[in-house]
Image (tube, rainbow, N blue to C red; front, side):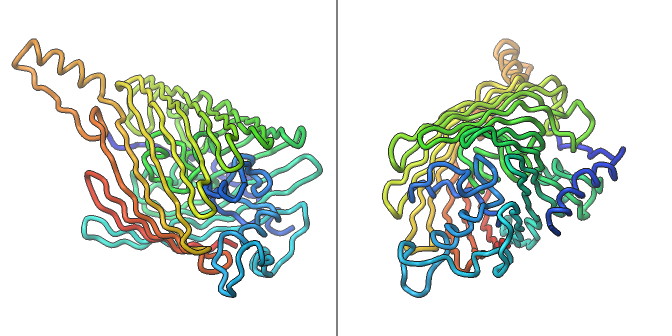
Length: 420
């Protein structure tokens, strides 16, 4: 597989910086972001808009979401449970500030360490600010941040709005949008959006998000999305117009992404999602005329007040490969409020390259042609295991440790997260 040669647009870069930055800077001077923790379904929260600005969950929180985060996420040291406690003053923006009801603001700082191959690296993983303004049924929102990624990295580069290519900081915007609430159930948005697909988990390097390229770290696309949310049914559909923060146009994928989820009980949901795009040239492999897709079911189940199960299984299609698959199953147990232990099993096979299959057919007829062996993850299934501890030790702060065992390596990954 050849390395990525993605280039960020330089023509008109400052016009794009201003176009994205000015509305957001205006918001910051006139929410709290957090991951969409899908295991919140065990508390009876099936939908997302009551707590999140994004109708499918993630990032900026509503005022109600901020209060529930303080009640249900963090550890309480006074012995009170979430039903007895009241939201603390620290649940407000910047731990002390009340905002107008029409304004949501927040930010996220993540410092991470990675130990793998007997090497330890410490780096800023996320430095973002978020915001949303509401004018009646109209909303405008998005994010700004800075990122430093090494050359060739697949992460962050697709969100750049400045054009540094080396090991330098870049200004990024993962998402920005203009939205309209058609009704209490229907929201329409246009802009650069998170792809509506599968279980919206925070682990962007998990195979189910990495191989389908549907993560919330760098998998956003430009398009228009229609979201529906009711007590028993939710879904979102998005025609994908391409990512105009990368260049040239041949790298831009166009197609659709969407999901539909049905409540199967008070604390159980089942759904199905589908994704399909076409690009003249794949930005990762550089293969031409690439059609990619992923399709499959997912589920979220609150087994008890303390234990939740998340799962997803997708078939993957690629015009250069055989049929592939990817999925995960995760159990989350809250030992005491604010302290979570998680076990995750993941699996994938992206499919063997069709060119390799053709070579093997030739090798069967001609002994002078070398046979290509299937490799884990490319024509042969592989599995990985995650053991995770996540401690929400203070309002707006948590620390997470992941021990990740995959066939090719072992990684110990630690995050310290502060969200404003």
